[in-house]
Amino acid sequence: MKTKLAILLASFNTKEKTERCLSHLLRHTDTAFHIFIIDNGSTDGSVQMLEDFSTRHEPLCTLLKNEQNIGYAAAMCSAYPFLPPGAHIAYVNSDVYVGPNWASRLLSHFSWHDRIGAVAPLGRMIGGRQDVSARLNGQLSDWPVIGETYSETDLVAINEYAKRAHPKAESTKSLQGTVLLVNRKLHDEIGGLDPNCILGADDADYSLSARMAGYELLVALDVFVWHDNHSSFNQLSAVEGSTLIDRSWTYFNQKWAGRLPALSWEDLMENHEPTSLPPFAYHDYDC
Image 1 (cartoon, rainbow, N blue to C red):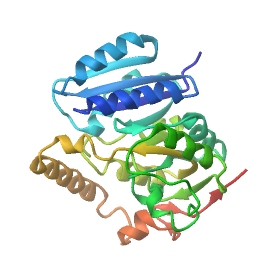
Image 2 (image 1 turned 45 degrees about the vertical axis):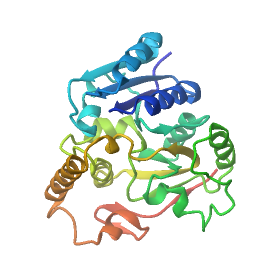
Image 3 (image 1 turned 180 degrees about the vertical axis):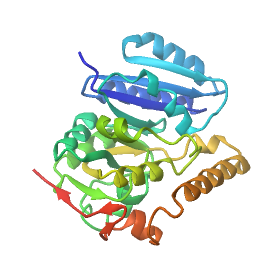
Image 4 (image 1 turned 60 degrees about the horizontal axis):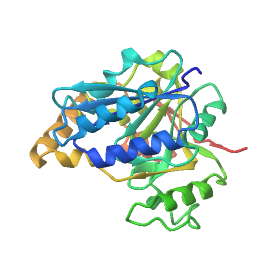
């Protein structure tokens, strides 16, 4: 069967959460897929766990190992030479747990029109337009209760509820990389993540690049994922983490300086106000 989805997952000292993430991907990915796991120099036993996992699931899994942490975006880039031809790309954080039919529902949103460049789900502790907690006082006010402790029963129930959402999706100015499904057409046209966005800014950078190329970004309102929030980041020291984030955003600001009109961050990346550069006009999509 032709691989329809290449799932890219970076691992760094999140053994238990990574194992749970992989278990959910195996059970709930409902399209032909291949998982590329890139370990970024873990020292917590993750490597042995991932070696055992990749051996047990060899037809579905490829493990790539770095001797040290080279950053999230660079780790993802290392998998690009191995991507199956034509497969769409799903970037998945190692502390995210997907629910039933997540893949087919996200993939279905590419069918709205041929300039849908990337789609991402709603979720817990994601941020931006995708963060369920920020929307519970609006159109999602009647959603099931989302607790602080992970429960697969709750995850399944919330996704059962979400599939009845109307509208099914809405356009947005930026998508979070927690789970990010990229149309292979977009990837082949503009490339992948920028490895110079070492830790942070990679999803904002990619969102801008996609919009500048004339592609639309969608939040899928019919898919929910559970995010345990910044698990790999929390393995870094406060100084190291802050330094890498500062370097990433400094690079981002230098890269885009002078290329865009003088817009506030909210007008550039967050709200639904129309802009001509980068292009944005709000749309929602339904059956």
